[in-house]
Structures are given as structure tokens and as C-alpha cells.
Length: 126
Image (cartoon, rainbow, N blue to C red; front, side, top):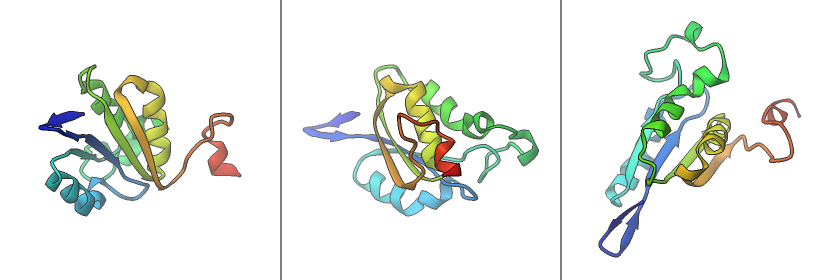
């Protein structure tokens, strides 16, 4: 979070769904930036302008790597709001598990949302 005057500003990390890219968040990102927030709308593996090719993204970890790399680069005292759409819900779930101290909230927008008592793949097969 960034405090600007008495207003608290957030860093939103927008994660697209399958067959999309960070470009799909253009309107939302623009509105958030106009509100003074920091926004990162990244491209997951082999999506949008990410340089990886589809044959280089063999696992979910490969696919989610750009998000993990972004969270690794964020200072330890900074927290982000993760926003995932569709299949991006699984990516933000993994990121929130890996970096709980860097995530202030996770927002699932019409997204896959694993339950704590079940494996993440459960949302895909049931």
C-alpha cells in the first residue's frame, strides 16, 4: 500500500484468464490508475507478449512464473491486491500461498477459487 495524503493507495496485480493476456484489463487498469493506484497487468507464460512459447510452458508453474517473478521482486514491506479472472484464479491462489506476507487481498472475478480443504485441481474435475 502507498499512502498519499490521508488516502491509502494500493498496488493491484491483475491476472488474466486462459486465452487472454494483460491487455484484457486495459479499462480496469486505466480506472485504477486514474484513482492513483499502482497497477501491474502482466502476461502469464506464453500469453500476450510474454516471450515464452507454448511448448516452453509445460507445467502450471511455468505458466504462473511471470506472476511469481513479479511477487519476488516486490519489497518485503509492500503488499498487493491480487485480482484473478477465470483460470487466473488458480494463479492468484498459488501466489497467495507462496507469498502470504505480500498479499493484502485476493479478488476472484468469475474465477476458479480452490477451497482450503480440497486440492486446487478439484475445481477442474468436479
